[in-house]
Length: 120
Length: 414
Image (cartoon, rainbow over all chains, first blue to last red; front, side):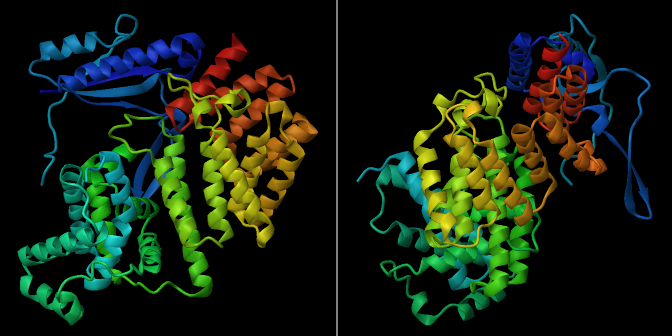
């Protein structure tokens, strides 16, 4: 069963982290990623660019029509997402709780219901 | 004779374009020849370290690749047609076996191969991938790892590129005159992009991810041997060497970036700097000075300064003036603005930046924002500097850059 985990943040939040704490913070996340890649349960971990670089795309006359946005109501937006593949939801929830900052900020957790077949 | 694994790999990568060029010249069918020559390289990589290197490595590879090609052709559905095509395309004498000890007339063929991989019908990413595979001799797995994309994605990209080359028909005659200059410029641009990709990337696992900057230098060095009198080829090689020389000082062990001003210059590779300076010094007086030579000259001035304060900024500004005339582009203009600030003070630099920021896309680019932040800071306007660094961080395109810019905000607002 597959699960999506989301963590949120914004640039002001990153800027509040003192310089000397960055290497340890990054090492922690790297260690988490390696640990669950090794068990085969972490399919992928992706960090997103800032919301100012996000776009809205529509199709107009068969061509992409791109505008800035989404203009979010919330102050924090998706910073990273993680794809898990676990034997049980219980196990996936354990992994979510093992995320480095789950003691400070909640990890958003979504069961994945459907997946397009990878091979045609 | 036993041969080290590393030696074998170096030799194979050197021979890769020669083998492929020989095959394509003999049989046409770029797409199939490329597969066959990769398989021969792989066979050699497995056999030579154990069994020893054959007396004529190039002949061995061509023979094995030719056999693989025949196997492939036989197993294809349209077997008969293809065999006929090949039989027709093959001179009778060559069916008797390749003249393995013949003096290789490879110089122009290898060059034509490189020109072919940088064909104008291909997109930039395809040109890069195909060049690395067909000329650089890297495997699809390695190229995919270097660009951080799934192997299937890269395999598709390379396959489509090869098909395009096959469809247009591979042409071994190098284009004449102005067209040749234009195509050579495209080749240099591809090598430059490969180098930049490697230089900007944070170091991955060195065992599985090939060092693209090193690969770009190797290929440009090889091109420079083929075209020693071309000033821009020399200029590009010098630029790569002079830039790459700073690599040991450019990142902290934890992967964070160290800007030029704060680098420990003791760590710079002096041998590489000397080589780059010798190359560019020889090329500059020889005639028309193109953009790569000018960029190399600028890199040389930086590399020659013992400390940031020793930097000869007036000379750098003069070179940027020439560069802006030779190859106008917003990023050259931005770098020139930084030089203006260093020579005439931050306010003069900010004036130049203001004109560049008239272009909306440029105004939002993280490099412009970062440069302007730095000038505000030099001018003593900490608030404006912090605001620009924050906006630059939001628009940064790589995690190390974003982290560096974020830290500047932290430093200024603490």
